[in-house]
Every structure is written in structure tokens, then in C-alpha cells.
Image 1 (cartoon, one colour):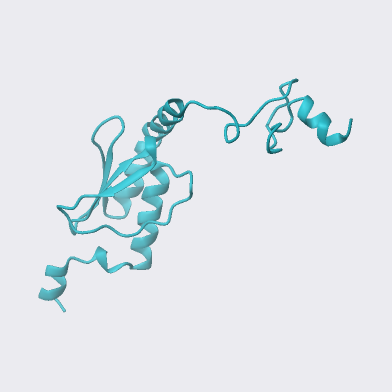
Image 2: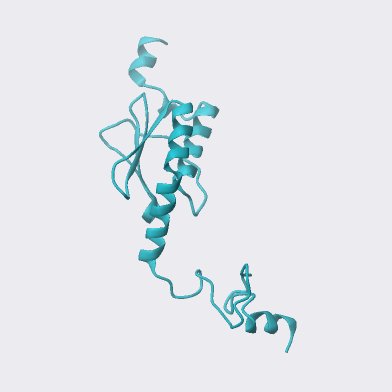
Length: 144
């Protein structure tokens, strides 16, 4: 066999797409992207990661005037003093802004984001001074 086939047979790479694994299993294997995987398990892992990152994410938020709170095991909220509120659901990778509050900024996130990534992205938007949603329109009108 060729080198590529040997890597598949010993489980060093995914037999479908060729993605390398950290350790060879000794038999052919399929990566999570290609194989049949349990979406509920993925959601549980993402919720667990969010719980583990919460303290660090909350400290980072506090340093930059943001408020991060944990509402439930699967729901977090990130807000700013001007009234915007971002609902974060790490398990299913969803972000929703609360329509009762000012619209939050557009956050630039990696495809496979975590709770800490959301806070970092919000901090980056604050540092850039954009977008205008960070400003309270009533305060801006009072102090042009």
C-alpha cells in the first residue's frame, strides 16, 4: 500500500477526508465532521465549556464595562450600560439580541465560537469605538 493508505489503516488520519488525529488508533477511524456524531453530545460539551469559561469571561467583561451573567445552564446574557442586551446560547451556537433593548453590536466570531469568544469580540468592538449601537441615543442627544 501507499503511504496515504497506511495512514488510513493505522488510524492516523480520517478515512473520509484525511484530517489528522492526535494519536493513531490502530484501526481506520472517521473524524467528527465526517462521521455520525451525536449532536446532543456536542451541545453538552459546548455547555460544559461555557461553564468552565464563565469566570474568566465574566472578569474580562467586567474589565471593559460589560456585564456577563449566567441565566441558566444553557443561557447567558451580555449587556452594556447603554441598554443593549445579547442573549448567548453556547450549546447550539446561537446569539439573539433582546428586542426590548437597544440593538447590540455585530460580533465577529469564529465558526466554532465559545462564551469567551463572544466576550472577546464585544471587547474588540468597544476598543474600536464601533458601531454606533454602543452609544445611548438619549445621552448623545443631551451631550452632542
